Image 1 (cartoon, rainbow, N blue to C red):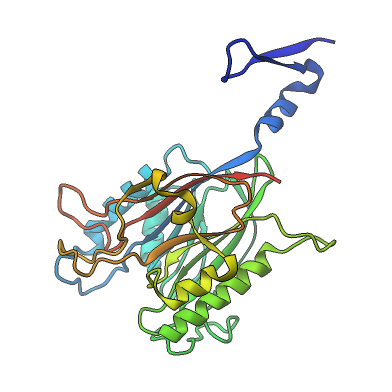
Image 2 (tube, rainbow, N blue to C red):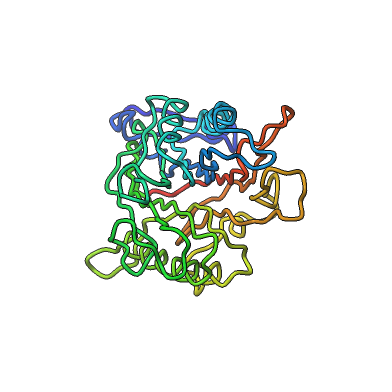
Length: 315
């Protein structure tokens, strides 16, 4: 039998012999044991007709936003983008900026179509197959389009997508949401609803074995870690803040995620988060909160992007 010999990176003396009859397909499959995921959560600030002090109109912010998202996802074929506060015209603009290699799931929160803000999940079809997706309203009636929950000031939604990696056939679930900015009861109950939905979408096998499909949640939750709604998300290990999973040695950038359109740090808060359910044997490579303003002085948004890099094992 003939063999292919491969020298390992760990030692110049060590080699791996693989029967040539396995072929390169088997070799590639053996090497592809994880999905290199970059998850970005970014509230882009809706395109208001009445910009606040320090805020440039969307027409000025748009090219900066497109350039930043393209930079963050370059050479990251499995990158997923969770956006918030996206109105339909901005959705069209983002599609144009990202290009034909990208698509999204998600609907407008007012009518389940194009009206109101979206919380879209962007992905590349060349890397991912869309297995399933739904939008739920954060209310006691999550299947009722436009329903407003508890003491919320506005209808709120969560977009959910189950994606399958085309190369390895490994799957994951991604959730993108935007909690209410006023209703505390709504935030607490929304957190409980998301925990239930994460359980449902993660699923399990017919023999009652624990599910192994990871679930990621990205969003502007309008809550800091001290808030009871945050505590509802992490209670009994339901979900974990990726910042805590990654650990300080791999944190990079800023701490606060909301800045407004001002230099003052008095009102800056950490209200944008990326959570994971069942980290399993994932290798978390980094957690970062990146800048939303550069030398030209233009605030791209009043939020900063949260970026998490992780190797998701294929099981």
